[in-house]
Structure formats: structure tokens, C-alpha cells
Amino acid sequence: MQINWEGVGLDSTTSKSDENGVSENVLLIQRGENLVQVTALIPGAGLVSNTTKITGLRQYTLDVSSNVEASIDLSPSSMGNRYRENTEVTLTAPSSVLMSGLLGILGGKYNFLEWTGYTYSKNNPVKVKLTGDSELISLKAVYAEDYTMVIIWVAIIAIIVLIVAFIMFRMLRKRRGTEEVETEEESLEEEEA
Image (cartoon, rainbow, N blue to C red; front, side, top):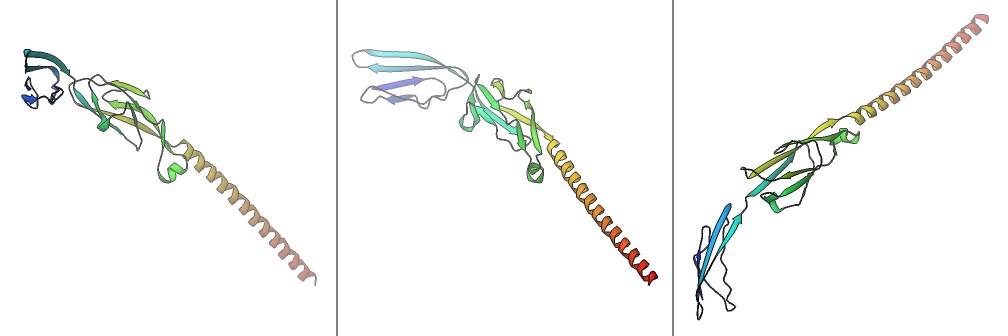
């Protein structure tokens, strides 16, 4: 049977039903109210018509970044970080991230400080509800440098170096003192002889 479609965003205006009486059409849903009217001429029943209202929601892309290399979790997760309007998304950033290289080995790290962008919050995790006119929503996890452990390790290493240097100095001084005493004894023995 022949099906007629009317509405904005439809892929086609006519289609045929299959042997089960099913007909499909693709609708590109617009934001706001979408009216779709379907009309079919059914043998023995006549002209049948139905109008359906479909409310289209805006789609948002969530752009999440950080000032350091950190893996940020989104819940619920979504392919390509695309979400429907009014979706509440929870963002969780690691509380701390090790620095790279020697500083990281010595315990240098970045501590989570705040979220900036679409929302400002010192809470972690943070929940955001996606609304507004811009379809691109940006959030940034901001971290602060923490060198506390680096300073402690450098201080410990410096103290160890000073202790070793002091011990070496004392041993060297003691050795020189022993050599001077032996030299004086030899001089006295030579004078006596």
C-alpha cells in the first residue's frame, strides 16, 4: 500500500509498506516541535491519517581537557562525547597525577585544583547538566604543581652527602694527624741518634 508522509526533515514523502503492512521513513529531528503526518489509503477502510508530534532535543558535544596529562572519566560515557539536552554528566578527574621524568620519580605530582569553563567548581567529581545555546560545551580540569616530596628527597640526599663528606673529612684529617705524629716521632728519633 502507498503511504504519504508530510513534515519537515523527512527523508521522503512517499513509501510503500511491506507484506506485513510496515513502512519506514527517516526523520531528521529538528530541535523543538516536529509534526509528522502519515496518510495511507487502506483498501476496504478508506483514507487513514495520523499526526504525531515529536519533540527534538539539542545535541551537545562535551569537550573535556586538562592542563596536565590526566585521564578524565565521564559518566555516562557516550560515543564521541555527544549527549542529549538536559543530560546530567558526572566528570571525575584523578586527585593527583605524577610528574614525568626525574621529578615524578622523586614524588613530584600535580594535584587537582578546580574545574573551569562551562562550570566552575572545586568539587571532584562534578556533575553538569547540559543546556544552553552553544552545542559545544568545554570543561577543563586544572591541576597545581606539588613539589613537597621532591624537596624532601633533595633535602635527604643533601644531608646524606654532607654526612658522608663530614666523615670523609674526619677520616682524612685523622690520617693526616697520624702521619704528622709519625713524622715528628721520626724526627725526634733522628735527633737522638
